[in-house]
Image 1 (cartoon, rainbow, N blue to C red):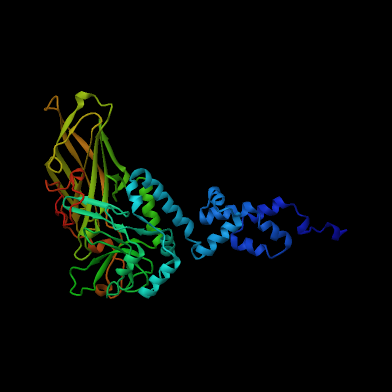
Image 2 (image 1 turned 90 degrees about the vertical axis):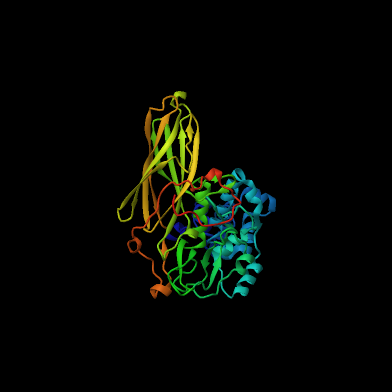
Length: 452
């Protein structure tokens, strides 16, 4: 009686077994195929491999039709070619697809600069050339797209202010290998980006050496107070290639980084940095400029972009003109500086219903953080005696994480903000400030003025 009640795997219905198998990853599914003939048959069930193809390779029904293969065969084909990247491919392929889809709508000419993916043997050849291993996530991304052509604007973002212009290209693997660093202070570092105008690059550490963590991404910053040229401080931008690239793509496709004249501008907008006074709304976004900053001496350069907008449904008689500005600037030590001056960037914009005025300005300070707030003073066009203030919301500027060179400290260390919080900021809206819509995008790089 007991023997007759024993359940046999062969007697179990297929549906519950397939449901259980659907929770397995491909490795476990393959292992199950060796357990019994029944599981071997069920583990080849097409819908199971369809889900795995979607999860790991982002393949769709149209891909299957084009290939004229079963889902399992399609999975095997991609695994044979890209199996070593299976933990990274889905994430990076989605990031690339999202980026291309967004750019195709917003600035399609940038899509044309992307290069086809590198071959596996090409990446192996680069490793042999530089005598250093590339991280798997970096290799995986370059199998999808081998960077971009050296063009302007660059894929990895732009910034323009006064006589200063930066636009970073994502380097192809061959160009990157040509810039591989072996000099003291930058050993085993591979450039990821390059700007024609400033010579600026973001680097990735291929080995954990000279105080850097493996795969860490950073802007190098020479210690201007050290006599040793190998004293290189770092502004850190990512802990791995995947984290660095996907976070950048997220900021682009969500609109966090605005598209201005077919270029990605790396301004960050805090949604709380918006204030409305009557019919006029003021919003602020900010960006750190590593190429104009240094850790030693502490000199941190920010640019901010301000948008002033008058509501479309405002009454025509509410038209007004900006006369002056007032800034209250507070540094990390709590010290306050107040600045007053006429207009903004040498202009006195007239605001009418629906009118938008945008401009960019800059500030430098020697503490690691600072915030600004203030107001604009306007007068009505119909009655110059009617004067009123429009609030500028408080906005914060915080230096990104940075690390001192081992030459200075004896061992690399992340420096606390308090160590650098000395008072020496410079913040005004002088006439030499760069207004974004008036900037020559082809202007050569140069030092921006210290004063805003």
